[in-house]
Image 1 (cartoon, rainbow, N blue to C red):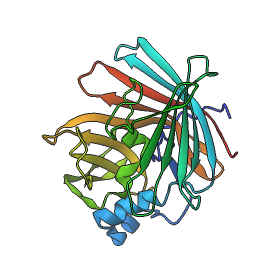
Image 2: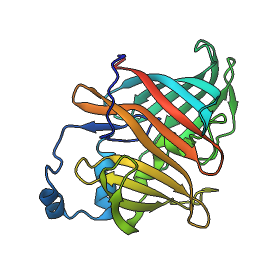
Image 3: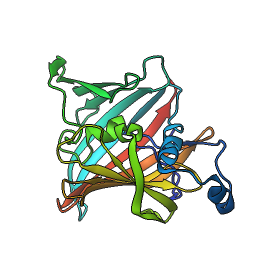
Image 4: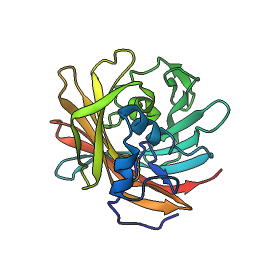
Length: 256
């Protein structure tokens, strides 16, 4: 699937992320949105329901570059998702620059009623290593394991932001939520989430630091359509004040 779709009307669920939005029972007008009158928790749950349940295989590249565009690193990846399985899981393969050798493998599981769990294996010999912090960056990119697991979609301590409505980076009208992790995460006191008021999917996320200020943000640049779903083509992740950002580019999606 190499067809490019230059759209900024996006439907995001992060994946690594794949952002997905199925054509379903979503409000079709601003009046319908107002009549729904969802709570913050209901709004977040609507996003969770959009995560695809069928197995998917995504292939792409994480590219770290300076803000002026100089490429610092490229990290090919494969993501195999099975969030609809009896035991929801995903497997991430981080590859060498040629895309042939295995550098790191992560196995993600989501036990019912518990936070996502990460098992990490290093190098071609697949040596087990200690589980990473959710807020830890993935191999020098701006993406974190929290992004990869989408764990914040299941946090129950959620409210509307002090500014409960506004535009996302790409100009979509959104409800703005703040979700607090159930247990402390070093470097992350909460996340601020932009949810499209009509599409009911994630458009943008900010990680908030210990003082409540934004330290990292993510937003979608382009999407493409697969069957009845809009899916990420590429998205940006920026660690604020770092002088660099990471682009996640998906160039192939298939059903294994």
